[in-house]
Picture 1 (cartoon, rainbow, N blue to C red):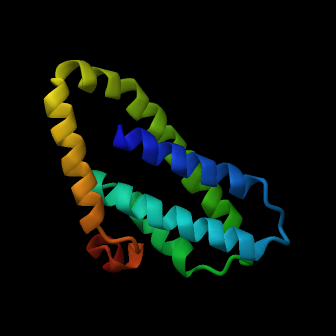
Picture 2 (picture 1 turned 45 degrees about the vertical axis):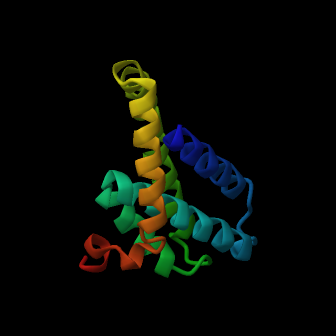
Amino acid sequence: MLFREDHKTVEKLFKTFEKTNDEDTAERRRIVDEVIEELTVHAWIEEHHAVVWMLSELKTMDASHERFKAKMSVLMEQVRHHVEEEQDWLPDVRRAMSRNRLQEFGAQLEGAKGRTPRDPLKVPSAASK
């Protein structure tokens, strides 16, 4: 399912970030930029405004800033909690919907991903904060 693939992609990036050390600011920036793009799309589809706001802060923060790693840690904690919650209710969704309806829903989500902003600063709710 689309959400599960998004979650796997982001979790892999989180683990890569966690393996970096404080001198790896360029690598941290690269990883966070990729996380920002992935999560902006996902958050836009699910309307997670708080996540988009955090992504916009990370987007404009220098990777060597003393709070950069801490902000990323908070984001990772929130996203991991969200993934756990989704794992609780996604099986119910799969049982409640027919196979055809699930495929239609997946196609709609995939189409929405192609139309969503990948930059949190271009998401109207984050830009106004």
